[in-house]
Picture 1: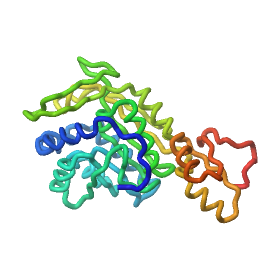
Picture 2 (picture 1 turned 135 degrees about the vertical axis):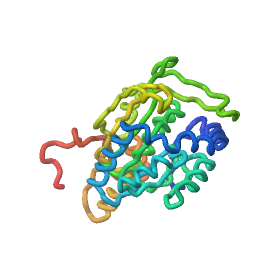
Picture 3 (picture 1 turned 60 degrees about the horizontal axis):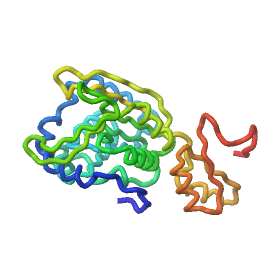
Picture 4 (picture 1 turned 90 degrees about the horizontal axis):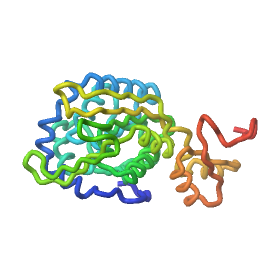
Length: 287
């Protein structure tokens, strides 16, 4: 685990972990080969991989909420260096057995096992659906910490089905004969986009689709492709440049990162800003 302050704890993690531990083997049998019947998902993962490789051919990508590891395995075939992350030890064990040549580590959206800016990108395939609004905001900030400036993020989630609209929650107490305690959140794409933007991600593409017949739960789904915007992160580079004699102002699109940087380096300047609107006058900076 990382040594940074993970911020607020994500509610419901313990119940979610216990639930997925109990169904891990069955889940792998049911969903381990699901991408074979999901051409839209495969196309989006191919686009994501192309973007990451173009930016940094050897960069690491996190698969957050990797489950039995099938998405990690697919991304590896597309040329990416992938680490699968899941909060469930049962899922991690299942993934390691199914894909012994790949890396899988325990971690949560509140505390990802990654250094600041370590990842060139991340995917979160239907893993934010178990988080409430505060948990999703925490997740967005933690992803912004782990993904370097210019890195890519692809998030997928359920929007609605015949019985639930965006904003509704479906509680499941029994799954494949196992006692579980899971909340499935149907999410508003605009709300998720706003939370990502507040954390420092710029939306690049949104894909909405209907359920694929016979291949999945009949829900409408959204995929958001976003890019990590301009970012000083926790301020360590700003501090180093200051030590070299420069007058530095650190800029980040994430309020959480700015707050972290100000706490870590109280004598330095840090301001909110994006590539689209930097907080500087014309010609103000020497570099």
